[in-house]
Image 1 (cartoon, helix red, strand yellow):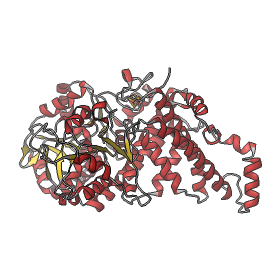
Image 2 (cartoon, rainbow, N blue to C red):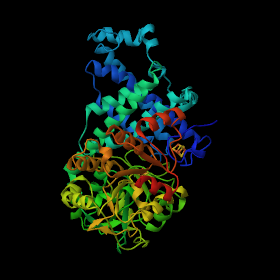
Image 3 (cartoon, rainbow, N blue to C red):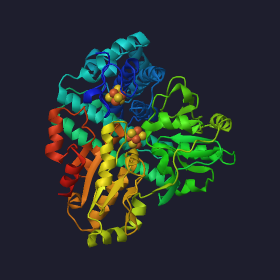
Image 4 (cartoon, rainbow, N blue to C red):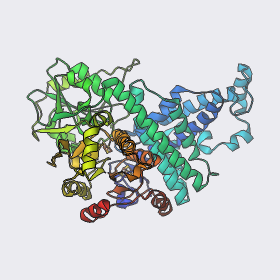
Length: 570
Ligand code: SF4
Ligand code: SF3
């Protein structure tokens, strides 16, 4: 087997990609990503010890967060980026080790005598018995690519022999990847949390610990969900304090006559900088896929060149980017390996990357210079119209709370029989048409609560409204699933219920990549039961781990639309 990856819903044969990723990830890239994760775990070991003695290295926090994020499905396909990260990670690890030894976090006693410390580090290193207590990820070292390749063969997912331990370790790691992505966006807006970084490191280090039992790992999985809630709450605070609360908004899905820039991904700070820099240049800005909800924030409405949303979910980009005619800025996943016909129009930023595609870095003050993209746009034709009309969204917690009386009344009178949370991801599998049919066939007295790119399966259907409340309420991006949880908790309070599961809400969630994993774990932490996951259950759940989720949380898969609707409606 040349590689092994089973982190997303497209894992080949619902088991794992072993030759090349269905996503386009090559064997070399997969191995470099595996090794980077291993390096991050090794750094985390020192970070945990460091935090015990008051050592918090912010560069380490940032490095681990961005490294996790970079390995999310469809984020970065540039192997060189991972090789450089591995090299930097090993350097950082040694630096952190030094700080921790100095603070007494490893040898047990603090010694601020620089001479003693230098002597010890250069001649003795860690005492042999101390070193033997540390996992290999914290002590191995190499400085050339050949050795990286050899090492990578031994540290991937399958290095853990026991399939249940492996399953839980990976479930935690994927949850952390999703969490890291959300925290990264918050950090970009100046919001951070030492506590969340501390937990991420503790959990990463724990995936190396062979003394942990399955029960310990299950507990850690649920704790990951707690931090998932905290991470999404932090990002919600960052987004709403920076840009206002999302409000009901009609978004144009047609085109104008000016050249345009298409921006995709989840990073609102990148969007803000792009809008500032394109204002008055004659270049319009359109959103794609997960950037659509940016239109719901009051702060972006002042830009007259913020033209609308172009296209659909990420997987349609190969067709839609072609027709857009102008440059495309990818701020996060999901990037599909670009076709030669438009590759020169693709730009990446943040953790996204693809070999041969121009990457825009922030300067030391965090500012990104998008002038190259703007000049590029000016040389391009206006986008080809692929759709016309408007879609409506902006039903995040604050807006729904403002409508609470109306919603509660509709539930009390029976005008709304049930809500269906259909958050999550879209994807290219044909079986996902299930979600379009499911939305179409739901009885007219039901309302869909959505978030994430899953919405594109039904947000352009004409499903009508119930007394003025649209039957599809879009809260925003996948992280705004947090809003849906807040709405559920609010309804529980209004209806004076003991348990959130007594509400007339069903959960039929579509997943694809690892952000959906942290959303799922967050919902479990909030006590939500009987979540159905599709279109297939994660390949990384071993039969025993799946059983734990079924027995304790009533997690289930999907079957067919009619039977599932019957089942949900009881
Ligand atoms: Fe396969 Fe998904 Fe891993 Fe890509 S990310 S290699 S498609 S399991
Ligand atoms: Fe979509 Fe990638 Fe997950 Fe943020 S853009 S939801 S798949």
